[in-house]
Length: 388
Picture 1: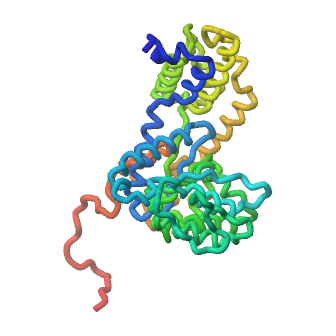
Picture 2: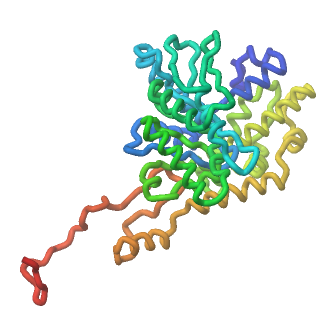
């Protein structure tokens, strides 16, 4: 191991192997650990919920989160998998963006069936559905003429048999690509129904475009859990300090002989990444690639500026992030509106802590349904008529 934290063998490797080392490097920074814990707890005990929404700005690290949680679930299920080799620990698919304005459920179900396959499992499921067959190797073949409803039945059947701990749908904002508000409601009803019928928690991961899905109906709200994966905020001193630590960690793991001194440009790193670790890492991968191609011992200021996202690109990312965060902010006005709706005539009690929309849980000053300590009047008040 070198003084920078990069293994000596990596430093002696080819430029391609060094680039691959940094590309595969991940760190458990504070926000990632916080959301990781919240998501695993929601999967382990959904408490009646069948859908988990994980949303945040583009490039915040949602795919890294998914991979991390998947690996943890697989490891925790090893004893059960040894007893039941027909079980699949987790399933992941990416919701493909539609070619037109209409999301394709047929394509979605085909991708789900492919993801549910496990070549090493000896006992294969017989779908008994027209258009679904297996080749000589036992791999699934889906006839293009198979109708969507038959494919859905096959997915339901497979989920019941494979019993995954969770079904992850990455880029789930593509599910919102439909015509009309009623169709949007139908989209989520289809996912919720699939999750309920199979007893499989579905984790929908996407950008803030997922937000319209959250509260389409009271039933959907009750059956879902929200997990917000936010960016680091420059106005928060603790956040900015954590972002500095992220930059320093990336700096130590750059497989270059020289010192890139990224901390000297931490403000610039934040400006062009808008506080998103995934955006920052992709930027540094490009910068490292240029440095290796030019035999540069470090990522220089010129290379960092050359490979940075443009001001226009960063501004667009920042605006979308801020708009998403603003839509999640709970204000005193909205709280009081809820209290009036529930006939709680008084304004929000001063003892109640305001909800922090960036947290994974709300902190309440008292238990719901528990009376405050007051002295009750004894006897029958005048003018009050009691029914018998």
